[in-house]
Amino acid sequence: MIELYDQISKLRNILEKLSSYVLYVSTEKNIEDILLQTIDICLELTTSDGATIYLKEMIENEEKLVIKATKNQSVNFEFYLGYSLPINSISLAGYVASNRKPVVINNTLSLPENHEYRQFKFFDRSLHYITINTITVPIFDYTNSVIGVLQVVNKKAKPQLKLEENNAHLFTIDYTDNDARIILAISALLGIILDRIWLHQKNEQLITNTQKMLSNIFDSVKKSILTLNDIMLTGQQKFIEYLQAEKRKKVLEFKEGLELCKKQIELSKVTETIITVCYLSIETSDNKVSNIFYEVLSSEIRIYDIPVMVKENEYVLLLYNVDLIKAKMIAKRIERKMIEKANSQNYNLPFKTKWSFYEIKPSEEKTLEEIFESLKSTVGDL
Image 1 (cartoon, rainbow, N blue to C red):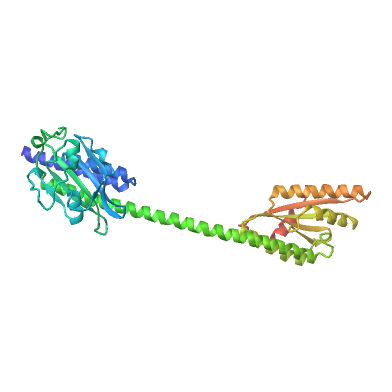
Image 2: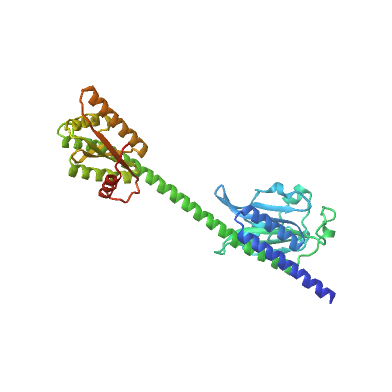
């Protein structure tokens, strides 16, 4: 009865440990942490002295097994992290990977030298260690391809024992069928988890590469558009000069100017360039004030900015690649220059200017007519 109770308690403990392990690796994304956690659970549940995880990698155009995680409670086996093995029968891990089947050996010392698989003795000799028994199983991915090998060595009678060459055969006990089933279950879960993470990483890399490709394409297109923009601005300059009979001394008529403004706004959306529209009303009864305004305008705005006459003494200026702050500075300069020009010519011309401004962003959805109406309703002193 006591023995049965002990078996039930032991089974419950194994299930609890396995459950904790499953929950951890199912949510963890760091492969190194998953491998280390797998090593720990294998050592604990099988009371093994050591455990190693090999994963397949291409090295110099040859597929090999590489030690990715390992732990031994009696010797420092971590020195061999990154060590690679060929996938063949020279090593037990290589044999398991190439033959796709688990191997349980409870007495490696009894194996004949010419056995179909032989224990790889290099590690034992270099560390003054001796491997008495082992469970070595393949790790499969979702497509049933071998991606690695999981191996435990030397099942101990008591977990805290430290094994040495002269006592290993005394303190090790045989691996059981339950031990083999536990290692097989862990390797099966590990394969699925690793496969899922690698697939996720491939998808992320694919997304990153696609984003980079699209970004490069966008940059190339943008450069081409900017070049086209320069060409269009040059052509626009000549078109404005053609429309203006007196070369910048007069502004565009409303219909022609409106169409040109619309084309400039469409271009700015493609090149992601802001535009500020200025609305100017000049309160005066003297036509000479208009001439002063034209003279000042010809020197204060660029050749590809668009001046439009809405009606007598009411104008719209479309300033390309100019934000609201700069537009107001330009307006103040125009007003100041008009006053200076009138004073320098001894004109006793009373006039008053009123302005309003609207910054058009590339994402703007309002029509130019709607913007004009909005500007008319907000016109005021600077």
